[in-house]
View 1 (tube, rainbow, N blue to C red):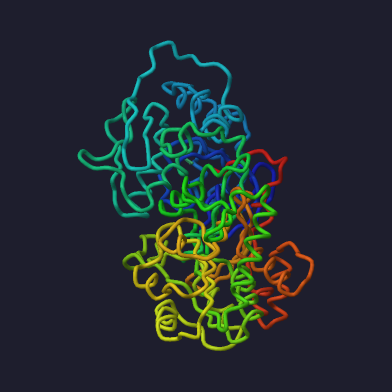
View 2: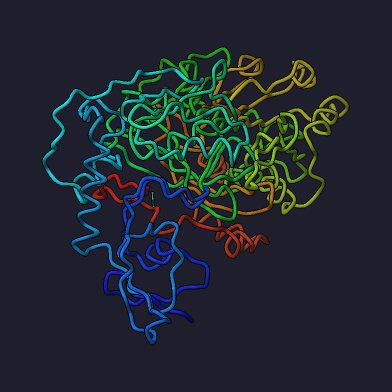
Length: 548
Ligand code: FES
């Protein structure tokens, strides 16, 4: 295998790798702005210039320094090359590049959303120098609203062009361009167009400075207060890896988490913005018993005790039970809910809730897939329900069973959809005579009809496992506590089951549940589940770190 030396560290590499790629593979830092592993190489920012010495075949292979500095992001590593970014010449070049980039930068860090995760701040500190020789007036550029999710603060831009290349090379929508030349060149949208594509928010992540900003996150939180919890997209069947970023129990934003097998570096705007229902004003927050006032209870524990007893009594009295497990639930939720249903009625009908679709799958130019299926765990829920034996009905079959089987007197429903999911036909199929227990997050036409309504936790408020459209099982961690008095469906089912059996209640644990599932005939819940990488798990003492 060929080897080279980067800043005195000997590195193996594969033919074709650039110096920057070799450095990154060996945990060596070479500063870079315009380079991104998912985009073409333009070598325009020049911050990565390195001094390279290579064997000269015309001088008996003697190692000689190449007079010009070379861009590490574009120059292939060569066998025997000696590369340095810490020599006087390379450091001088880094100082010059940083001085140039800061000439027209407004240095408005105290009011900039990017402060704390800004590549310009970080490199100015590490690769720049304190003074500026620039005496003239800075060129001022306008702030622009360039799309439904993104604002452009042009005078912070360093013209790395990552955003322009993203719209050309990944989404193929090409809304962005470089306008002008020299000191007055700037990024802009083409006249009459907006940055409006299903993945537009990724340009905010790609921007190494604070030029492109997320409208919904703007001025809401300083990033150094945010904690990141590794999670999985809980809205679609993609299984995209994400970070949930939160502070003091409140979620502020979603960021992509790199997974080269699934979402690479990207997420859709739908995933980035669609989580906000968890903080909806009309979120179901307390247990409710029809014709009773559970709100008057003194404490959450008392309200839950009363409501869970009412739910259990009603379901136990039903001769025959039907249970619908939503594809928005985790495998662990599904397992506990089905376990409860079959403990109450060993012949309980089991069904998977409705699976929302929106058009067809869309494949981006780099292979990233936007899934039409808008539920995170249809396959996982079905897999779990099948392990209980007997037929597992799809939503239409479940609805048909409700219409024709009068012996179904008790119905246990789960929802947890980000929007309205109960159709008039389904509401009608439920009818009036049955005892309905509903575990849900948002009000719908069945919440008022339910005999007992138990407020459920969203996926960010619990831990579990989702199986995506490609049958990949991935676990996710709990980011924030459940809203007000909400509980996960798994915990609610466990509480009801312990009441049913007269046992002491126990606390839900995703790992223990997976062990129990594996013992009950789902070994894949132990062997196939992919967990977040250790480096993605942030501890309380971690600073908010950025990866350019
Ligand atoms: Fe190499 Fe920009 S990162 S020139």
